[in-house]
Image (cartoon, rainbow, N blue to C red; front, side, top):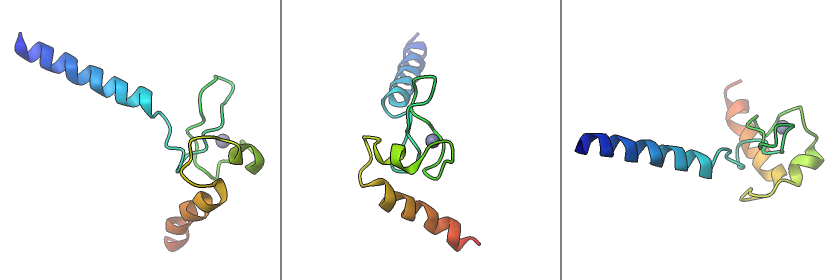
Length: 78
Ligand SMILES: [Zn+2]
């Protein structure tokens, strides 16, 4: 019985952590899509304009800086 509680608690924590941060705004687009959820596409996503992505709240720095950083590993791997 104890094990059951333990597992249930873990499931709950996992669900809560997902609810808290479904999107990493420093690495993902985050623009609210037609489902009312923040887009989980990459920062460089082509579905939304830069202007819209700049307006997304929750990023630790401005969009242009983060986009530049997002590109660095991609450029290195070329
Ligand atoms: Zn997008």
